[in-house]
Length: 442
Image (cartoon, rainbow, N blue to C red; front, side):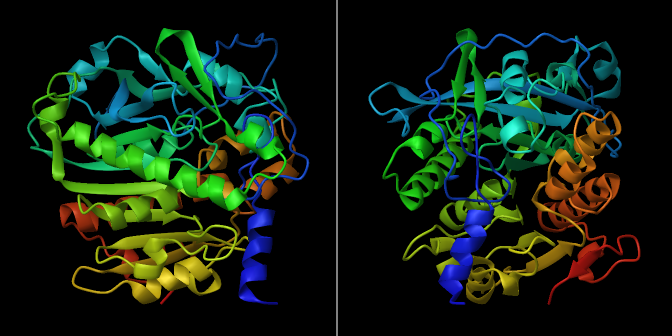
């Protein structure tokens, strides 16, 4: 079978349905054939579903020495209009900051942060949200708004350890920025400042100020006859990279500094910036590093880096990068080591130069969702009979959820420590007795 046809079939297997029509079970996907019409993505208010006897889940505790603080900010890019709604205003994005907090101040901070904002949680678990359409959790079966993090809102920043590396996090197409809080909290507890990005109108829901909920535009495009998937996905990736670069601009803008908890702005070391992403977010991380030299290292967790159609290979794959990157694959049929994925193979071959370290690991027994909060939360739902174990195997794989969480945390932290902090635990040197389920490619 020709490579291009095989790639197209892989993309079809990874079809996304977000907010009513598109399901993300992989990095990028073409529109599902059963896509139906949905809302046009304009901001609306969402009422929470009644609690009833719905299932509840808990996020795993962070493993680092620091307690975690968090805060959320609404940013407006006045230099560009929203690409999904041209003529309707400037681009708005929501970002979350997760950071090491001072022990004493953390205990007295006002409140524990929720996993998802109430309006966003209601939509995430609704018939049109990615909890249902992306991860096959029955609509209304889970009280997502009841899940809390381990972070305190606006807690004071840990002091005495100098500036800290900054890590940007980008979620998969259709997933909210909160759908890897387990990893994000763990990195913050290890001393990183992590900035999570919601790509508005791409994510199935983004809670904006004023009671607005911006829902994805992708379902309407999926239902529209004649839509070109390649064109839509190129547009989504450009918006994502532009969002990333805008956020870096704002973080470094000394004239118009963001209003953040005391000491947080000064604690961010913008000379040591990394980026991590899952699926389309992994593509975003590598593409943003290719386009912007402020990003010094990047992790791509199971994200294909090409578009459907002729000439679909991305510029980062065609041209490579000269800074370190880590690829983390799964055992899904269209994933695995870099040699099995055309875009990863091209990136590997074209990445050269000083500092161009390359790493590739595969989590055996895993499916696409194993690198997200699905690994920790779906098994809990199966034990409560809110989802089937078949759903868990389809989204996470046969690997145990707690092992998937441990692998993701350990390998991402090892990579970032090595290339942003100069601390090498040698986990990435080869196979590890600590993690026998991880294969290391050469």
